Image (cartoon, rainbow, N blue to C red; front, top):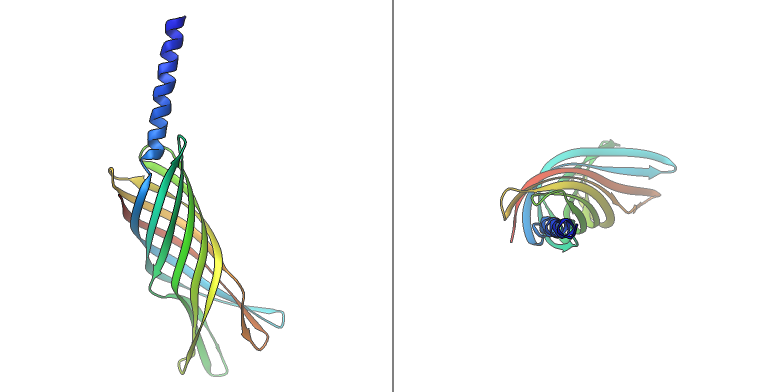
Length: 201
């Protein structure tokens, strides 16, 4: 009986260390680049009437993150994301003028809790605090507004080897209302599919 209990204790200790090693596999600094497929839109409210516009853009996001193993399988990531380039957000025409909308200078501070399925696969959620410049271009002039917001998402990170990984994700981003004058408010938003590769130091 004592021998059986000793074997069980050794087995449990081994399994515990092995599980902790799963989380440890994702600990440390990482840097990556993701190809993004973003649908960006703006909802305009004028005297109770809502008009919407949107467009899709393929781009690249750069990501920095630090992951900390918490217990056996949980990982907490803290990081930042930088959106390169301009994302189109559609256009509205009226009175002989067409106004094109877009977003650029997109940045995010990310909180990324994860659960290690194995020592090479991590599923994660994401909460982001966003900042961006929303642009309006009428051809003969342009204007911009800095906006903030929050986002959430989820994804999968898989290690190819000890350092290289690939990642896929889906994010939903909502920005605060913009008062653009004359009783018009604008509310930007976006959904983003992404996939890319990175390096864990």
